Image (cartoon, rainbow, N blue to C red):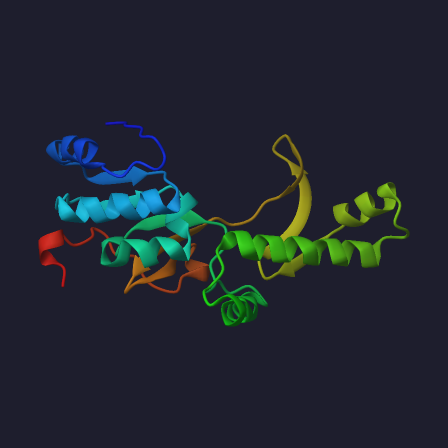
Length: 201
C-alpha cells in the first residue's frame, strides 16, 4: 500500500484505517517532524501493530519527534547522518554545549552546519592564498574528522567531490534515539519485532 498526504494534515485516520486492514509487517513513512509525531500518535490510538515502524529520516530523526510523539515514538527506526551520541571526536562536547545554550540537543542539521564552518576554517588555514583556486585545492585535500564525522572529498562512482560517510540507523529506546547500526557506532541493540501496543507498559 502506498499513500500520500498533504503536509500539515491533522487527521490521518482514514489512511491509517485502510492501512490497519492490510495488517502490514512493516510501516515505512517519510514525514516532517510534526506530521511524523501525529502519525505515530494516531497509529497508537488506532492500535495498528506491525513488526517494525520505520521513518525515512526527515522528521523521525530529530529530537522534536520524540518530544511530540511521546511514548508513541518508542521503537520507531529511522536513518540519519548524525546523532548526539555518535562516537566522533567532539560530537558529545558539541551536543552538550549546544544543549546548554539552546536548551535541547541539536538535530543533525546543527552538527552539519557547525562542522561545515570547521571544514571551511581548516581549508582557509591550509590554503596557499585566499584565491578561489587555492581555496578549492585546500578543500579538495581535506581529510579530517569533525563532530559530524569524517570529511574527505572524493571522486568515485561517477560523482565528484563527495563526502561519503556512514548512514546511521537509530531506534527510539526508552524515549531516546539510540544508534543500532553500524555496529561500530551502536549504543543499544535493536528491538525487532517490536512489541504490540497492548503488550507495552
